[in-house]
Image (cartoon, rainbow, N blue to C red; front, side, top):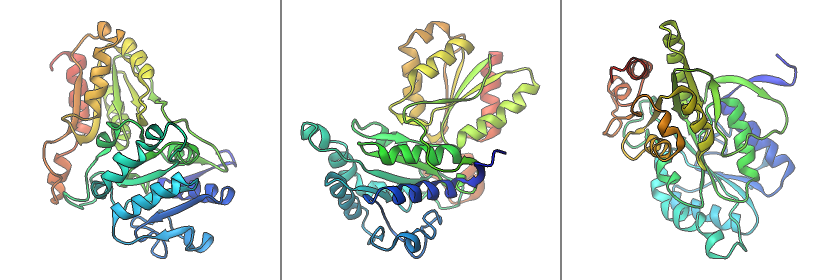
Length: 332
């Protein structure tokens, strides 16, 4: 491995991005519940309070609405706040500030004021945290004009996309799947950015396009290995950005493979897969389809506490394999 590239965990990559930004820009500071001495609910901020002090790594009261409001106000005055929600579910308590203030201020003030704000959301199931701490709400925020919504799936992208988000003049919402925090991968040293609004083809194939988000990218890649042994060649597209969506990469992939499977953890109805499906149906790629588009999303239920039931509510590798097999072989 190149000397300038190390193996870091997803959490370490995020921490490194925040530290780099804080070192070069005094406007960057962190806010959130228990992010100081405790190091964050998932230990992502770690020792940053020792390195940068409590004035730049600020423990906030248990009031998501209040903390989000302070972050929005700070961004409007020229600061670069990074606000961590302890769990993405708690964004529901701060939607007024996110949706009615952060997203709309540039528009309502004629472009005279921007809101360079980053909000981090530990999201998703798999930790036994039950219905109020395990949701995937990225489609909620992806519906709102004025917000950018990203879902990095690798440590490399977690660092690069966070650095891009910090430099962005508009509010960026970053959804980090909790099961990815310990996942390791190659991460370059120093500063680099990964563009917001650009998907990545993680695996090239000719028989089927799987558009996946977050942890589902890794499940799709594992499913693709099994399917390859059956003679099914799968292309895996990591969406990476929910809004603004990279439509052209998806269109080009579907035109090549003639089949589309959308895989995402959030509840299937009105989810990201619905937007991807509609976009393809409205594009020139529709005429290339050899089979109906299939969406594979979460069940229509709150996330259960029981670990087996929890697994059953979100797509797993066998589900992806079965859906892909049915699409290619015409059994769906």
